[in-house]
Image (cartoon, rainbow, N blue to C red; front, side, top):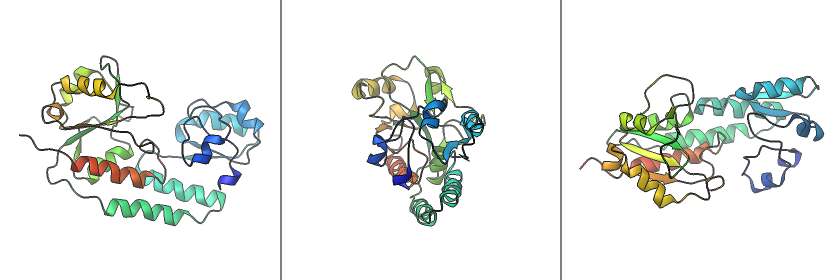
Length: 239
């Protein structure tokens, strides 16, 4: 439906043509006036930006709310969106995800994994990580590993470096966005992580991945599943 798209969020990178569309703001607080100026027949949002969607309804703009947290959510949302825009692509896209899941190798040495959002050189400030109710946790479990973060809170986990040490993950995978963190010194940032006394540091199981699709809860999660499962296969056992 690319030729019918009239606007997008500030974070759209794929496909390349999306970067040429008018930007209506961020996910949480999009610019309502900008959206209205584009005269959309449908605005698609996530369940956490319901306020913005409710405002649009006052202007008789049709909205569609998707939930995109877990792998199941993503597959259901692809199907839901396809039905709303009369697309026949859903089955193919969902099959790609299912095929990626089927091909996931199980770790021969199950271990605890912490997935970190964003790479930074100073770990004294808050660190955001993947919690339980998110597709990253699904991928960790599909690889026969466990999430180092064990609390059942549905809130975004935010840790201090003391919290990270207390969790003591066996493996740390850092998701680095070249688009938003281009000024980060990767070598310096990794040195900071290796200074923390954790099993991951001790056994050199800290890595950075910078593929631009990793954060995106879309059909491209098929790529994320393969990329992160490969990364977990690189785990080195304790010496």
